[in-house]
Image (cartoon, rainbow, N blue to C red; front, side, top):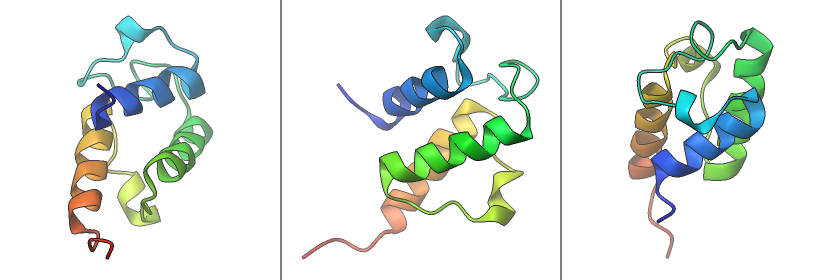
Amino acid sequence: MDDVAGRVARIVIEHMGVYADQVTPEARFIEDLGGDSLDVVELVMALEDEFGVTIDDADIDAIITVQDAITYIETAQQARPARA
């Protein structure tokens, strides 16, 4: 199953260079996964590309944990108009 959480986890592992067991919903990108602000920006860009969503700059500061990213993407996908 290739759900949002699994896809986010894969991207976090690839872009942050961490092990799969480190990527939990509660894991914080900076404090727990050892990222810095540049890592977070690159991660956001990768998430935008993967999911076809736009994450507003003002919202980036609120995406602190893996779960925050999952929730943001799921919400953004639900808000997207359906394709004809």
